[in-house]
Length: 443
Image (cartoon, rainbow, N blue to C red):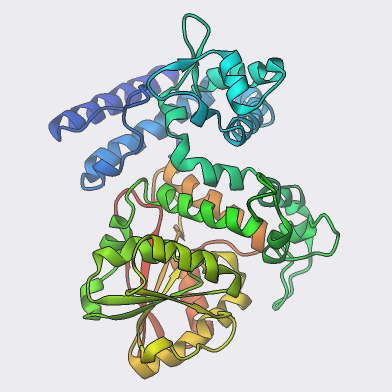
């Protein structure tokens, strides 16, 4: 809602009532549960993916409610919230997530402060109580009538989001935020972009994110490296970006039938977290997951855990170098780039895409680019949807000097790679922040 629909309190209130009534009516019509504060209630809106009218009414309600909140607060208090209570909300979420309070509190019961402190290894209850008191104001956990700690819908949803929250609110992912202004003021170099994260390198060496992450042991130094935490976080992000839809969004977004079997090359596929989700649903297709050698062990473990070793193979490969021959004589039907290009400025993306052109030409392979596609203009989507896109765009710049692109920017990038590359189709399934772009080579 770039242009506020109604600047008065009463007009906005009426619009909110209309939106709430519409949403409730549609949920009843489709026999879907309403939003709930119960720990066992609705956690996401994946069940409404097939009902765009529900999603539209929900978007209207979110945008109008936010507009009313800002109007009632006024600009001074709104700015104070951004620099005060909203920052505290992030700090409290980070703290309670790292303490695993959501695991200690029973989902169907409650726990005294003393028992909770003992269970999570806290000796002094007082600072824990301070965190919890603020959390209650957020709707994150609640205090029962007898003073115990119990779950709310928000805290009950933490297990699925915990890894992403841990990584996203950790030091490495956050440090560049203090250097964004400095990065913006740097002279533009075509082949060398210094990301805010690199400028914030604690060693003062301007090391890239991917180098720094090898040194990080944030939450559990004796158990987990930064790379391992990042891999867990990416699996959590898959849930966030599909709003609980899992593989369903990928199945809707991509034209699997057009491949008629063959091999999908998951370029920069990490530990194979996308491949193991998709393989059970796309019979007759195999996957080759390509990533750095340090991903090989966790990838093989994940593949074995899902009993998919006959369908998915890992191949150590630097995607900035020419594509190798695939194992066992396989040939690519499609190259899959899932949230890869967002991590690179244009020069890096060109280096990633150029090696794929040869396989596209030789084998008539497609390239599927999956990521967030930004709107070129204003008002093309709801404000809260665009915020969901642009918050990750800003993170991409923070970490890597890259970020997401619009359709116009992506077309321009493809033209710099090879003038014969063409976007064949774009789809964005309902309730997904991801767009699915099919790129072909005109020969």
